[in-house]
Image (tube, rainbow, N blue to C red):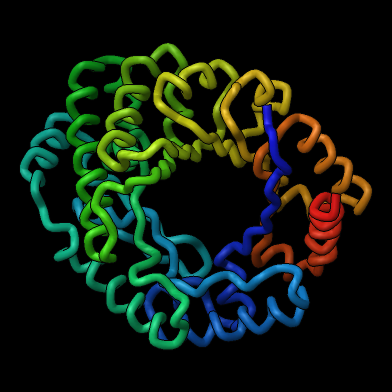
Length: 338
């Protein structure tokens, strides 16, 4: 049961940054000066538009959550108006096991993509001193990493050859933890976070519930155990179904963010007995009236949501729907005053 007021948040999606500056999404990944120009424009736009009600997003290098996998050899692809993407490294489970075994002990900070992001982060920090020492380049969770590394082969082998998949997942999780620790050390932080750590693992939801005890829970626990000595174990996993929720506590999750999980309801979340986040999707809020937004927030509060948030990006700005975000902030301020 929640004992304090819910926290409210409006997230500014990074695709609005190049849009406001009149450049392509690809340019903020490949051109540091264009990135900096875009952040200047977006920062001023946020200040002008929200007049202090919403702080500007902290400037960073352009976000790419595939950094760990790129270091492991996943080919990276850029598109003018879409997120960067990667292709599988191999479609053979045994080849994947061999490659990850050979990659044990690798220095992720020596990889070209890491050095690129280190340079960009330093350049952004020269202009925006509040920016992090290192930013933008991230890691995916064990199941998502495994599925991206092997492609569809992962899901086939998970059913037909689960014990070898367990070995592969153990190697993959060790590699993810090592990468996270090296990033922390590069930033001058403890390699093992003494407070807690976060995990993003959307593609775990594609595994049926009967496989979770064997192929999800052990590797989430391995990840949390390797990443932190503290009690906070945050999970972001989209598209989950109610039958998968019972595995969160055994996996060590202490806070759950379902984000875009249309098969989960607030009633499902009430039974979870874990603090949770509830998202008003960016593609829903833009079609809602002020009263509908207020009613949605009220329902989330009554259900005990600990975090209540919404998002906006290029679409919301392009379609002139910022008034919907202002309406969400109105409701936030009503609850803040109570």
